[in-house]
Length: 212
Ligand SMILES: Cc1cc2nc3c(=O)[nH]c(=O)nc-3n(C[C@H](O)[C@H](O)[C@H](O)COP(=O)(O)OP(=O)(O)OC[C@H]3O[C@@H](n4cnc5c(N)ncnc54)[C@H](O)[C@@H]3O)c2cc1C
Image: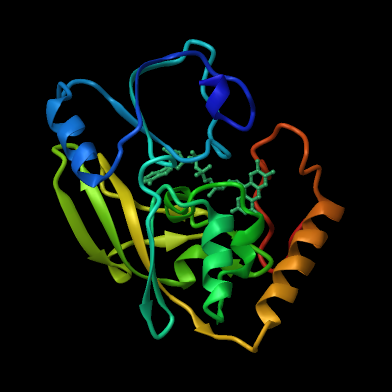
């Protein structure tokens, strides 16, 4: 797993599966012995795997579940494997605001949903309307945002369920304004964080009303 985590550490997984699409994911989960534990992998930017590895199946979505859709009126869909940076650019291209902070988060949208990723005052779940999840039997479920307990970098996800897509509502932007904001946020990040070194970002919580 060392190749798949930003810490660049972690022993081998028993199985490593990259679904081509949702049907492929269902087929895999249905074929997998129910006793085999599953670990969902985004871009591994908030994941510490021990040297002994993972005695189960790792599902890596970032090559297969990569669809994004503009559904109109600031309503966007992104599959779990879409990178946060790509989603942020996609939203900006259509002139919608609210996802600029994601430009510098080095994970997937699935990881952002699981962690309630946030930066510079923005948080993933501020934008979420609905999500799709898959369960251990490979069955898909659509759930409204209100059915999840969400807090700072924490989301309560039903056991053995994983996000496969999110539906996000963004706001109207000023023309070209979002591009400038993204650039300034990335610059601020580069000036204040060792972005080129191996890490998992912050290993602390910001105190209430303040940040590092
Ligand atoms: C340099 C650097 C800067 C960072 N800056 C920020 C920041 O500004 N703000 C911030 O919030 N975080 C930041 N992080 C942490 C990290 O990028 C985020 O937590 C990100 O959301 C993790 O996404 P990922 O796809 O890499 O998830 P992973 O690290 O692959 O997974 C993290 C956890 O989420 C679970 N998970 C992943 N995808 C899913 C899914 N689809 N369904 C269910 N569970 C899932 C995994 O099993 C694991 O438990 C930073 C990390 C680094 C290395």
